[in-house]
Length: 318
Image 1 (cartoon, one colour):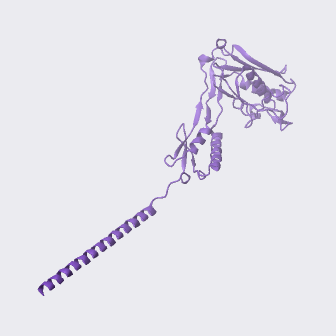
Image 2 (tube, one colour):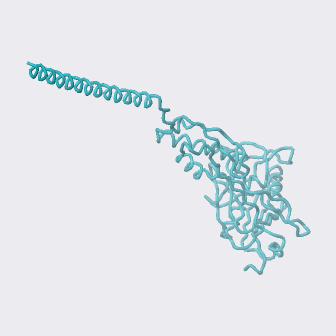
Image 3 (cartoon, helix red, strand yellow):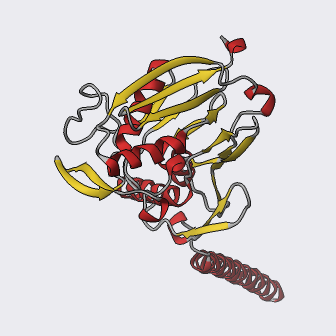
């Protein structure tokens, strides 16, 4: 009997042990599952709390002058994702900024004592370089350098010695001696470009050198061509000076940078050989592509009705 009872007690103990172990394992599994679920929930919450991705179009960029570092404009590229629209936008922006920056070189002159006077730098905003920078914006660099270049006149007193010695090209046009107002305008504009000296690589802008054509500066009413019609205007006749200059420098082989035709033929130069100009409008520009300096000389014979423009340089350069 005692043996039976002992066996039953042993069996009961064994069963209890199994039950306890099973309960323990079940609890551990539940606890592990709960821990995993908690970790997963925290991961989801962390992911949800993660800061949103910063996009280029959400940022504001500062466009700064490459020369001084001064802020020129703040720019928000809201259309960055739409490449076609964005490219049109940044090209228009570059063009707008360039209009406020680009300045023709003011050519130097040689005075009666052989001294160089006047002159100022050519200033150019490189639109293509700015557009390229704006096409490659990123979220790490919010300052964009606006590429602006300045080029001073490239001529020295030493290089200018004897620059008037030898004519390398000349051109003459005729006008009516009795057309006093027009002739006065030709004379004033010819005087304005006389003795202009350009070193290698220097640019010439007719509008920049001659300046505004106003009554205060002595210019008079005279016929001028506008939209194929002859109308009276202050400064009529100055295009004869620019056209005579064009033919002279073209014969000299310099590089023509900008030239426009009149809306109808003019009588003082062959067809297609004119160079129309107007203040805040078409300009006549060229660059001295020679390896030596050149000087522009003008000779106006009002009584004889002739205007001559010569391009000269020193004998030692030829």
